[in-house]
Image (tube, rainbow, N blue to C red; front, side, top):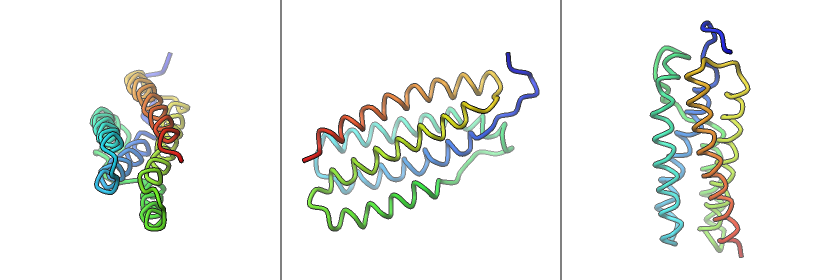
Length: 149
């Protein structure tokens, strides 16, 4: 059982990666052509926005305020993808591939947070969001396989 003095740890990292992911998905929606891919990206962005809302109270517990930054790692990938898409014959696949890697990063930061000793409420929220993130990751992985030529 977790001790009451346990503090929330690494939730702000999760929020930063998710916020950058939302921006990346929203940008990608404008760049891809396939309607199914666009709708999948919208679903991913909406899901991440909901997860961010659920995590913000934990960010306040962790740092005393909401988290409004984004992850440099995801922002860098977004820039790389824009350049790669300029030269790619299949922009949709380029975006799907890079966004699947963003989903890998989301799982990584969630696992990091879950590996910390967390208060019970934080642990419950993170566990729920991690399970949902795994489903979304698997969906993006399947989409990557479908769009591969």
